[in-house]
Length: 261
Image (cartoon, rainbow, N blue to C red; front, side, top):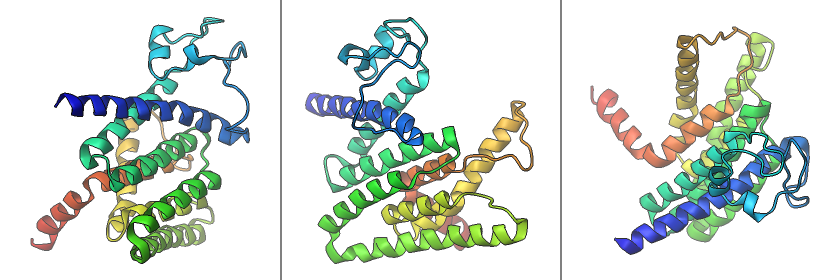
């Protein structure tokens, strides 16, 4: 038990460390900045940050959410991304232990974190993020499954076909895009991991999750205009996460509730 707790703790810290790097990716990709070159700096005073300023989670706590040099507040978002990524890595370890599935899920969930936050900030999904992560996922799937990877590729095609059909038909009916083509490509990457039939449920679950959040925003007084642009990527990422973790349970519930009704 003590060893399991210790391993889990280090997995959490490992994830939080990646979360710190993902903060850099989330900030720099939309600005077309290199994620490999250039030191991290305070956005207010532009002072270069050192290791004491960048230690995942603890630096934010010890510095009380302020820059050590200019005392300006640091967005809590950076802390939350580190915390979220650490928790996701820990959940993957608890669910899958150290295994092929663990490696696949932490990479997949990392992609969802980066894509979700970038889309939330910029209303855009960047191809480079999807290409890099999908390539890594393809390699992992091939090493583990060999030629059986064709089933994952088929599911990726289904994910593409579902959203491209909605994208194409909606563009004809409404004379404008109801969501970006980046969402179509994201659903393709999601299908690659989830497989069939989970990708079908995930594709439509995204809309219900989006509707749920819109209702919540309306209830708390947030005005949503009919033609207002809303980032859809975060809802897709939440749906993909839920299906990757509870997909079979959701399918079993659906089958027992509606098919046998």
